[in-house]
Length: 367
Ligand code: HEM
Image 1: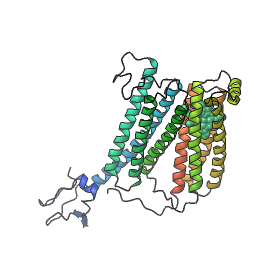
Image 2: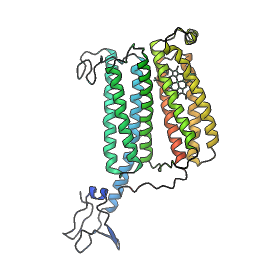
Image 3: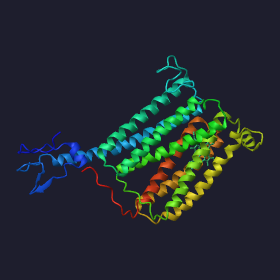
Image 4: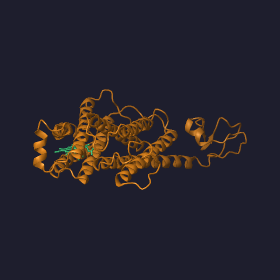
């Protein structure tokens, strides 16, 4: 594709890859006319330089929208994954992976098979979308740009996510399996899900103009990291609680609370009590942290921190409602949705704090 027209036959046409890789930066401005060192004598007339710039900016805008859409789609896949667990459909395709009950597309499927197979299709699409995001992002941003780092992280953690999901099926950590191995796998799966969401969120935020994070000399960083680790811990304990609720549903609130205290109860039942405790502690810590940070930064950071406080409080209420209603499936999905949103807002608030006083500039982009 030629972006410059020239009267000089010796001039090489400038192509988009040349512009992107910097080979075409020899362009020089002589009285409003761009020349290239490749040109023997005369300078070519600039015909579409403005178009090129506009096209590039438009591409970046589309890319950032796509990055947010991919993050959103991953969120949907995560929620459907919880639906698979809550309906006991994890073994809907048997212990086969990537095939479903030994078939590429299941024939005459049962409801559990449809639920599990749909999750596989959705996560397959998520993988393809992340791959597309990586390929597109590599064309738009130079190495070293934060978007490229986000893409690298997203690619890594979506592959780990797929492998963890496949591991659950292949090792039969599904359906009525109530082993320690399954509980541990669910907790690790959730931690990876959070890290994947963080990677995608940061990629989209950087593509939308979030500056480079400044890590060195940030006195708030350790406190924010403790908060983030706390949310991961809440999530991991929540995944174990959710497993306990799925495998050993309580008949009433009273029976559930009594079972939690019984020393002879299954470990998944006895562990249930820790999740609200951890959530309460981390929430208290986060509220204190927000109070400490809220007046130190600009309006955008302030808004994010306020939102974080609000969503945390809402999630505490949703958790309590969940317990009172004995965790019906729609409530479980809503609780997980709020957990993911809380995590995303925590990540964005942290990033916003860490960009303050950032002296580092973003490495130059393609143009
Ligand atoms: C900000 C605070 C909280 C976060 C981030 C959080 C996060 C989570 C997560 C990620 C799950 C696993 C969902 C799944 O895998 O399907 C979960 C489950 C659960 N959480 Fe929380 N939680 C919070 C607060 C609470 C509180 C305060 C309570 C109770 C008072 C609670 C009660 C439950 C229950 C009963 C489950 C199991 C049923 C389900 O899956 O919804 N949570 N939580």
